[in-house]
Amino acid sequence: MVNVEIISNEYIKPSSPTPQHLKTYNLSILDQLIPAPYAPIILYYPNQDHLNEFEVQERLKHLKDSLSKTLTCFYPLAGTIKDDLCIDCNDVGAYFAVTRVNTRLDVFLNRPDFDLVNRFLPREPYFNGSIEGSCVSNIQVNIFECFGIAISLCISHKVLDGAALSTFLKAWAGSSFGSKDVVYPNMSAPSLFPAKDLWLKDSSMVMFGSLFKMGKCSTKRFVFDSSKLSSLKAKASANGLKDPTRVEVVSSLLWKCIMAATEENTGFKKPSLLSHVVNLRKRLVSTLPENSIGNLIWLASAECRTNANARLCDLVEKVRDSVSKINGEFVKKLQGDKGTRVMEESLKSIKDCVDYIGFTSWCKMGFYDVDFGWGKPVWVCGSVCEGSPVFMNFVILMDTKYGDGIEAWVCLDEHEMHILKHNPELLEYALIDTSPLQMNK
Image (cartoon, rainbow, N blue to C red; front, side, top):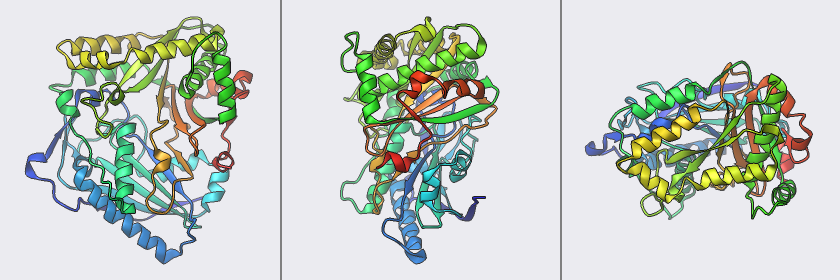
């Protein structure tokens, strides 16, 4: 039996105190949209330098020192959650735990055990809200028998979305690596999308609450390599669709197959709504630089009433059209006088759906480029909802190691998952829970 034993824990404070005038960090109105308390991530690093125990301890010290320096720039991450409107930047620091794992990293990666994955995290990742007074940042460094390392982070989703998490990781890694290119976060989001009250939080909680399912959740990894993605793109292009992307075709295929699984499980067809998280930074570059922290995202939604009979190319078009509507003009409307009405109408379209599947893509965010000075990670993953009694139909898309494939982490009702994982159309393009080591060869 594999044990994950905490051998130390402490709080890493910023190397310089946060100035008095920055002690309160206001959250933006978009930060209120997020139902999950954390955006978990785990990066796995093999011991390619053949370090011994002493050298690993030196590496840990270096990680802590560089984290302390990085928190000075990312000062809200060293604070605590005051309430739903702001962060108390009190320099409490980031919770930092170290564990021992009594197995080798390559043994784990050869056949990842989903029961272990969440034990590598410093906090429970489930949809149970963030607790006032809790630390914004929680980090756990897991040391394997071979001295391979898995670095995991649970940072409050109130403060960081996926893109902002990438910005922070690159800044921390750069400091550890001794890079001269210092990454400074842009914190203008609260002024661009100010939150005066909690109306969006209340609306989004009602909306997301209607999407939660009771039952038993199952999580599976569906891995699409570059050759299968090329075939899938060709299939989607058969009716004249131009240049479908990896994310578009994988999202559409999974949507199609999940609708079929739901229909088989329930015995009847239901209209289905897909939502995709859209990064607003790319839609309004002039005022939203790539290094902006916060939740600078909105949901694009596409509806399908024909369900499993839909053609892949038609679903790809629906996904593309929905995302294209979240453009620079839409972002300006969100910021304008009628922004409240735009947000309400957008949320209502999701709340009123019959059957829902949510997608978010972490592709091209550079997580496989996070190098602390001992090489790039061999695998990157998030959390697992396996066995959870309350869940949402949700899919996270991640790059594979070399960036040309996609890992889709799918969370569904266990009965629908059983049907999905035997879908011949899906299995034509995807492998299930294959070893990350095989994908990296």
